Length: 317
Ligand code: HEM
Image (cartoon, rainbow, N blue to C red):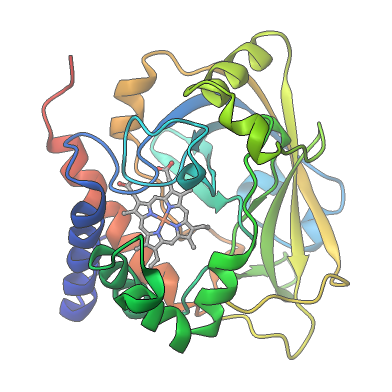
């Protein structure tokens, strides 16, 4: 994935990483966001109707190997799984098409995002970094939320802790333009739904859980059989806003089934592999194009800059 030439975009990307560092501290070798993670391998199998939506290579093949990284929120590498700030959880999926050829989905367990642009997100992070958590209304964060209704709605949306990474739905948030073999295109958003169903915990139960309850549980669950998810695409109707992650589409929009992921084994040497792998929010393959959502370009630059920094850090241990 290439680094853009746009100086403004690069400066914004560096500023965003610096704000994560300011909030969570610098932890060389770890991600500044979604630092605590665990990785698994498995297989993606497309659903029969998926080719009506996209001519992407992993839809045309009978199956494709995948690598998945689950993560907790924040840039704190040892954040306890039962810390409320560990929500939303992340699920990043790599479809391995050939040696060094791949396409990714980066999703999290909230259906939305607090800001429309990267610049606005930087302002939110700056407000968080300079706020008194015991008096948010009188802090820069209070002022930001008061003047940004979408961010307020996002922070007020409940984000309960899951029973398991296997009982959570993950959302791609930004829309893409899917193009099929006839050249017909539709806008859509990924929704990754667990075969085990959504199951969450009450706050009191979460508090009684151990700091690695999710990471331990998913390892043992996959050890005793495949863990499956359906990848769905929520299709926009004509007139729906497709370039703003803060705007939800009505729940009556069609959910097209793209395929199934079955996770079957942990990645050997997960710590090293997590350090190396850099997920890309932009698909960069035939049949799935960006939608014009401004978050995509800045995220792609941020993840690449951050990933290169991580790879350059000395190996832990
Ligand atoms: C301007 C907006 C955003 C910024 C600045 C941002 C920033 C970051 C950063 C710095 C990382 C670490 C990347 C790395 O070092 O490899 C990251 C990872 C991640 N972000 Fe974002 N993010 C943004 C939007 C989003 C959105 C909309 C989602 C949900 C779809 C999301 C979900 C994730 C996930 C799941 C990871 C972990 C990926 C992995 O496992 O490597 N982020 N983000």
